[in-house]
Image (cartoon, rainbow, N blue to C red; front, side, top):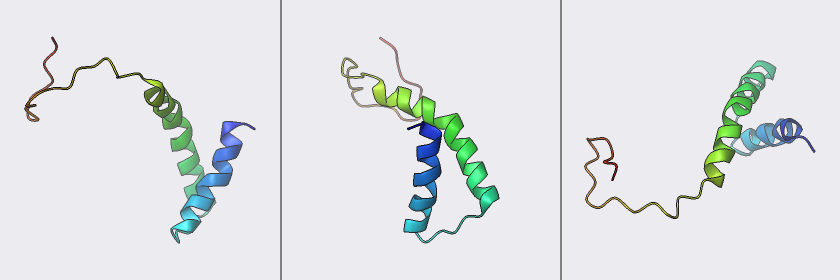
Amino acid sequence: MEVSSRADEFIPAGLASFGIEADEIELAVIGVAHGMFWPAILDLLELDAGDAAPERNPDLSAPPVTP
């Protein structure tokens, strides 16, 4: 089954489960956003960050320090 056809099924069902009604235009916009962002989300999910050391006492107002 193609990813877009699965999205066409689960997006309206997910919205309905929260009681949100969406018309064709809103579903089309959500579908386009899903198509744009989903490949990058899948890449992030596959990222192995196990070798990254945790940052100790991070200063959240500054950019990360690279070793």
